[in-house]
Image (cartoon, rainbow, N blue to C red; front, side):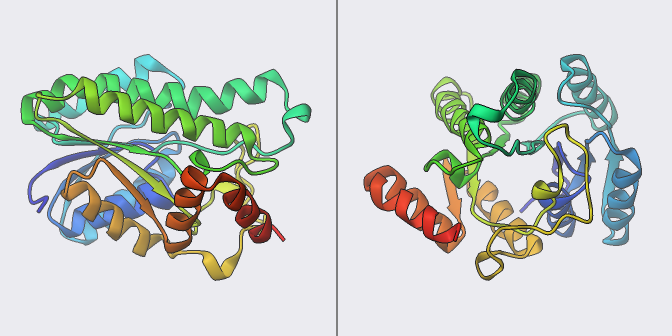
Amino acid sequence: MFQNQIIWITGASSGLGKYMALEFAKQGAKVALSARRVDKLEEVLQQVKALGAEGFLVPCDVLEESEIEKAVQDIVSHYGRLDVAVANAGYGVYGLIENLTAKELRRQLDINVTGLAMTAKSAIPHLKATKGRLVLIGSVAAYVPNPKTGAYGASKAAVRSIGQTLQLELKGTGVSCTVIHPGFVDSNITRVDNDGVFHPEIIDPRPKNLMWPTEKAARVMVNAISKRKKSFVFTGHGKLIAFFGQHFPNLGEWMIGKMGN
């Protein structure tokens, strides 16, 4: 499906970004990898090459609009075009709303919302030229409230709204916008503190019995992107949470409460 397609992924140094890159590589794509941690990007690039695919490093921090713009220009200069842009970079602020600082809230929204929107903005002109695919990574947290993850949930609700708006704004251009809302997937998101510092020793508090392996998640995500789906919610529990959150909010809140116990 993605043979010789040019794919750009932000937040590609670990987690879903990394495994999406590897899945695209398995399908013959040429993968442009962006993130802040160049050493981790180098490791992913080696894995991409081991699969017989071509990769290109374009390190950037999505907090800096100029770096996002430069990354896109470097990709287009290197490959001549852009077929798929995946705005995946993000993280989660944890804590009761009443205890969060303005700095923590701003960082949450700057990365997950502004960074994502600027990634889309920079990619769209080039995607229009190829009738390509824009992908925004949201979360089932966009559908239901959850204590101590209110800032994160708010950011992902914004991602959902931005995606729905872009689907209208891009109508007739040939560019599709797919918003993906994962449920519990094995990743490093819970090991990053509110300042963005990674702590490998932290144990993931999410329910292990509901957790999907990252590689499996990446496969279904890439499949949804290939089909140009507007909205894709997974896993099984994620679909339930999103459904009840939309149609039976009280039940959705009860389900979240049970999962947290």
